[in-house]
Image (cartoon, rainbow, N blue to C red; front, side, top):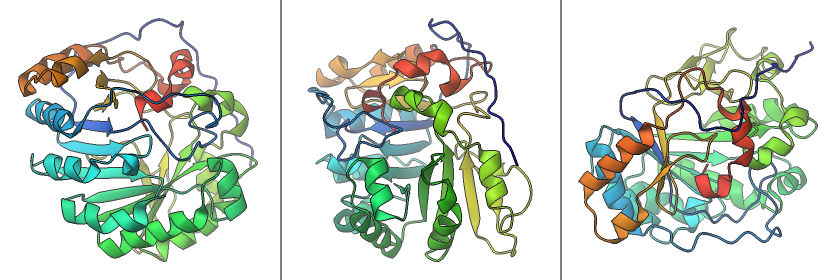
Amino acid sequence: MAFALPVLPLRPPATAPSVERTSPRSVRISVTDRCDMACVYCRPSMLDGYLPAEDRLDVDAWATLVEGLVQAGVRRVRITGGEPLLFRGLLDVVRRVRALGVDDLALTTNASRLDALARPLRDAGLQRITVSLDSLDAERFARITRGGDLDTVLRGVEAAVNAGFDEVKTNTVVLRGENEHELDALVDWAWARGITPRFIEVMGVGEGGRIWRDRLVPAAEMRDRLAHRLVDGAGERDPDRGPSKYLSARDGSARRVGFITGSTDTYCAGCDRLRATSDGVLRPCLSTNDGVSVADELRAGADAATVRARLDEAWALKPDGSWRGCTEETARRVNMRATGG
């Protein structure tokens, strides 16, 4: 079956249109812009001369920031990076965010340090965890991640499963000519461990903009490759849980596979997500560099009320429902290191 890429209009490089919306319900906090991998769809090689942010927020600043967001209506928090396990204060951040009574506290990691940290994270109050896993072939994995060690990651995943998180998922960015033939193997591996696998379309954000057109495998093609084991359809989202659409196994079990369609079927309409960068910028959209900094005020001892005020300013920059996410021209200029995953 042939799959044509959608022809999506590109907007001029201007600030995205905004509309009045309710406050965000979900935030992704990038506790560090450092990472020990350099995946081909995310960030340039580690040899490109990138200098990490010098003024990252500390644990106290993160606690105040999230407190302000929770008071403004945020109910779901996901901790990201860079690679969040590189942040020395991570366990303290988890404890303090959990104490705020959020409905959901999750983390996305490349699992390079998860073997040692899975149990402490669970004990600190982390509820769910997602691991990036783009291949089960060690050589291919190292090539996609530019140096990642597959065995180390797999040990981290096993540690997460054994730690008893409410949910463990994997994220696989599917790249044409690289790993699209591994979908069956990844599903088998995940299901055997009680893990929910998710497959993601490569997005034209930052470094991904260099390979997006050539490497994109549409979710429709992914579903076709797995049609023998999944029910028919495009899938359904979990209520209040982000853009992934899930299909159940044909065997009637509770096992599922998720698909995230950031390129062929963008999900900007109704987006309730905010991002907070490691240097204290509130960003309402992954595909623009628009944002409002609260860093200086946090370092000066600002309270949660100040965060709420800055949140209102940032949320006013949220693109409207006609926005097409990472297919917009502005997405090419976004630095994923700065914005966070």
